[in-house]
Length: 538
Image 1 (cartoon, rainbow, N blue to C red):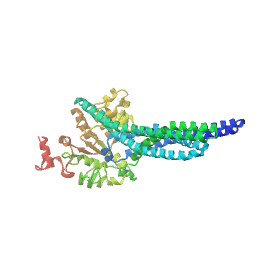
Image 2: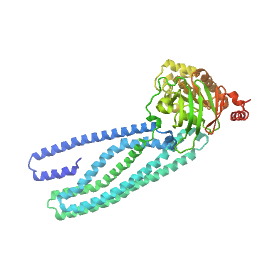
Image 3: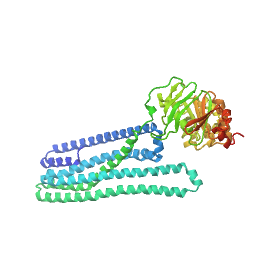
Image 4: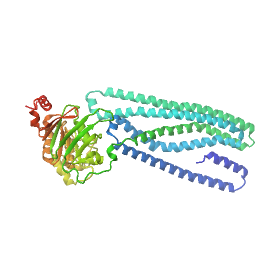
């Protein structure tokens, strides 16, 4: 990448010596054509390589996030992650390539324009080198400060995204409670903090601009003086002066462009940090379970200990029990006794100590995704995604339309789906907002039936639905999941009255285990006390 100043110098030299020879024009035209061709090739290759690198960074970050520990999402707000995928990726895709190319061109142009007068007057080397070193020092000092200020500005931007995302999620509650003013003021506070950092970024640019202009003015004055006093050739003297004057206009711009490259490289660093997140341990295991596993749904816990983060308290403490296949088990206990943690242990979120064995296969010895694929979960809040109803029922397209309509009929949704525009191709909004809560939960139940998993976990699925929907869910569970092991996490004891076995957890341990009649017969037992407090006995 050669600066036009070098071409200009040699062409001026050639013109002065061979101005009456036609070959001069041919050489000039050839050099100009070659420079144009090389510039086109250079620009295309440079932009192509940069975009491929940006695509690779994005794909690696997505892959790393999808395999990251659950603890990462618990400790990092959504706005911080959104900031990486919006502002940082946008900067890498759209801004960094062209600014990087422009900054490189400008820096080379300024460098050659600064040394060009030395070809016309050797004494200018004594002035050019010190000024160049001072300018390099100021640029280095500015870039170091500007980089940290840009990183600070990026950090202050994340709370703005987080607050905005949380406000949109809870907009109905905010309006119901008439707290719009509080959230607007909180948004302004986060925005003010971001603006404070951003104003420092702008102020640093003005700082280097003033000092760069001062150095360029000194350089122009010295070159002009020495050119007038010592130059023997008016043409070369004019070329030197024109080059120096042009340098004064471009030097600050070149430094700012180079600083922008440094600032946008901060986005690259932030994205790179998300490409090397610690994955869940099970992703490293390549062993696969036997074919058609699990075939019975027998679950065994043997001295299972679980912590949500290294060094944290034990939420499950030496848990030992066995669940026979094709049985319904109700798990009850007070808040914080480990009911949801038991489900997390089965799903390996996070990986627990001890052994969890499903049909004679320790799940920690097989691939993580294979473990989760054999388990269906129906949670309190229905989980739906934007897209067609068909994709929400059968994301992997493993079932025919006949099977889809069959499960919809089993959960009593076939008439509703028939009335929708497009029926199975009806478009759902994010989280299924264009359906009622009960309808969403029934769609999730239909998806569970379609998977035909041998282990089904129900985490209080009727907590937010109406009585008719609740009746439909439990009747469907009793009739259609007879061949599966059903684990029911219960807060209301009437949801486990039909279970074969009741397990009572207390502080991460099994306090009581047995049938509902045997537990109610223990007048001093924990389950009896819970049943009395909920009028379950009467």
